[in-house]
Length: 232
Image (tube, rainbow, N blue to C red):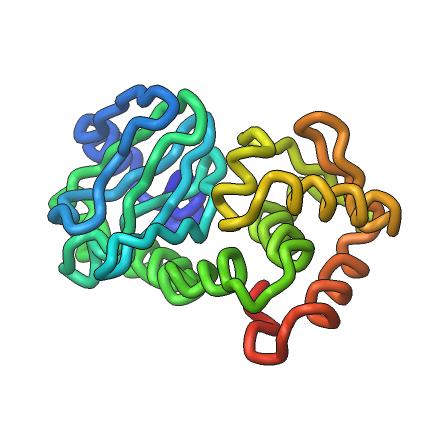
C-alpha cells in the first residue's frame, strides 16, 4: 500500500488524510482477521506477523491457499468486486493489521489515477483461491505440494544474486501438514527427500534453497500437467 502511495506522487495532505482513517489492530495466533461471507468493508494490510487465507466450500471443506507476509494486502479482491469475502484470513502468528476503510480507498482511486493503475495491476495478478489446487490436490504428491507451498511463500527479497533463497517458516510442521491435507509423517518424509536431493534444506523453521530455478523446474516436472505453471 505504501509503495503504491509513494510511486503515485500523492500530495502530502492526501497521505495525511488517509493516515487519519487507518485503524491498527493486533490479532493473536488463530484469531480471524476477517471471515468468508462477511461484507468487504475495507482493505487490510499485514504490518507484522503472518496470516493464512483459506476458503471453505459448500461442504465446509477448508482449503488454505496463501500465506500472507508482512507488507502484503488482503481483502482487495472482494472490496473492488463489491462481493462478500471469498476467503477467511486467520492469524498464523501474533500479528498487527492496518485497516483502510472502503470509503478512504475508493476516494484515493477516484482522485489519483496513477495510484489506481498500480493498485489494479496488483489485483489483476492475484490468483486468489486458485492456488489451493496445488496445495491440497490429492492427485498431487505430498512432496510437490510442499514445494508449491515453499514457492508461494518465496518473495524476491528472500533471494540473493546467485539464485539462492532462504525462507523463515511462520508455522510448525504440523501446521504445514494441515495446510497440505497430508499426514505429518508424509510431510517429514518429503522434507527429508528434498534435503537429500539438495533442493531445500530444512533446519528448524529455516528453509535454505540453494537454487530457486531448480526448485521451480522440479515442481513442474513432478506435478500433473493440469497443475503445472500454477506457481508463477
